[in-house]
Length: 256
Image (cartoon, rainbow, N blue to C red; front, side, top):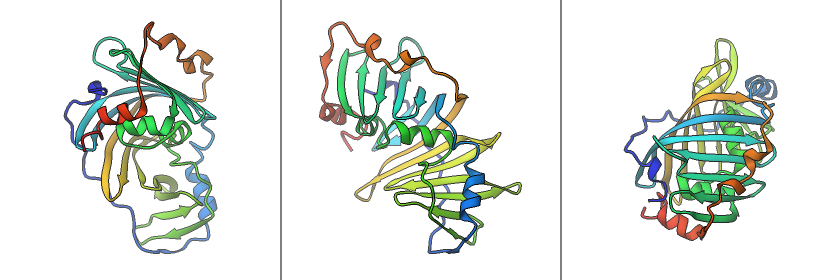
């Protein structure tokens, strides 16, 4: 299994439901969103250790990913086993990325970053979408309207995403977001940032991923060494080519 380091059995807790229905107009949506996003909208770089558990397809996942992100479009993800070197290294620069499976010396060059992430974990998110999601800003979409619901939540909508807000201790915070068939839900806020993210993805009416991410060792807006996003030192001496289709077949969605 190409993601063997992430396949120790685990189950995700039941997720809260997003409000449904049309709601009522909420004219103050812009100021509410600005307050809720104040801690995350300016995040240009972030490094984080991510404890992941849940399911992708029929595969139970559990493991750790060390990650670094920089705007625009740069990311580095390392699958960390209990011992030894990373099981995989993924480096994205713009819309494309290179994946190295270190144990098998397999290398996938210049494939769409979101498609590699989907093959590994069932969630089609590229570098910038991952950065804004991990930072707590949903998909980073600036809203153009807002609706209020009976549970006190507010949905603020942009052209391609919806962000959900709730109040805590008199201040607005981001509770979740949706874009396409991907849903984010935030919990365990501390110092204005969520420590837990629930990620769900759907495809053709079925759940392709239901993951819980627990964040630790978060570092915001520090200067990252440019070598962070250089995959060259991670390439094996005698790489074996890997295609995106092979990765999909061997990944957690390959048999689902």
